[in-house]
Length: 339
Ligand SMILES: Nc1ncnc2c1ncn2[C@@H]1O[C@H](COP(=O)(O)OP(=O)(O)O)[C@@H](O)[C@H]1O
Ligand SMILES: [Mg+2]
Image (tube, rainbow, N blue to C red; front, top):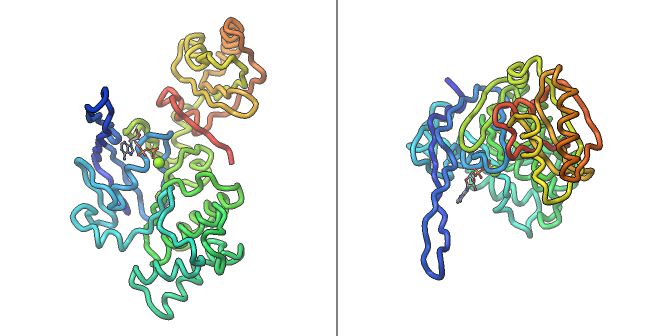
């Protein structure tokens, strides 16, 4: 039996769009278009995709916070739609936007409150609180007796994880657990999650838009784009799908009104281009065959010169997960933050 089984999830949101003065029109947003994947017991599984891909929607459906239009989800064999109460017992959940903590209570007091809601009492409750404070490093950081309102973002993320682990659930389901965190907190959380899977047999499902993070900590990854899973496998398997090809990266300066992505796409006759703004300029990444390297450099340099841009740096590397993503989706909207 799979730890988490997700089949054919479809979800459409309706947003009201103003038309004219009073009239409103309902605009459908198709967030999920038939999402299917399975998470095995004891693995760290990453749902990887750019912003807007459908990651949070998928997590909300799995964790009973949102109903799909159609499709099925089982957690340890429990149907989350038919039996949400039982399903919640086996899941510990954090969402990227953390709400619901009490600002005027300390970390320990917050955990006590949520532990009682979970049905924990007395000595067992105190022991569980000690354990999760220890595991998340909150005790070491002085978070136990600090008011929540004085917490840094990293401490808030740790407390959210501590709360998710309070009732010692076999499944941990975390939406972008390291989003926006300082590198130290991000590293602590990643290594804790991997350790929980390896040493305690927990099953961990995270979402991330960070290719580096997925590669680093996930046993298997599903790549989601525009509401569809486009690939599933170990990071190594996914990289093998573009074996023999290389990742080529340009650092580019161009006038602000220039659409660098489409210029590079046209120059090379390929869609497999991602563009990301960085502090030093635009980072343009392509997937190429080794013999195409020189030609690509020439063409990109020329095409950019025509519009007043220039190439400042070029690098060619073994393919990364990001390159798999670019090759599978054409690279639209990819973000790869190395932290
Ligand atoms: N409450 C909502 N109302 C309308 N559209 C939404 C809502 N939540 C998400 N969406 C849309 O659904 C799509 C998927 O969003 P989401 O699941 O949050 O993606 P991700 O977590 O991968 O960034 C996006 O196009 C987003 O704008
Ligand atoms: Mg999200």
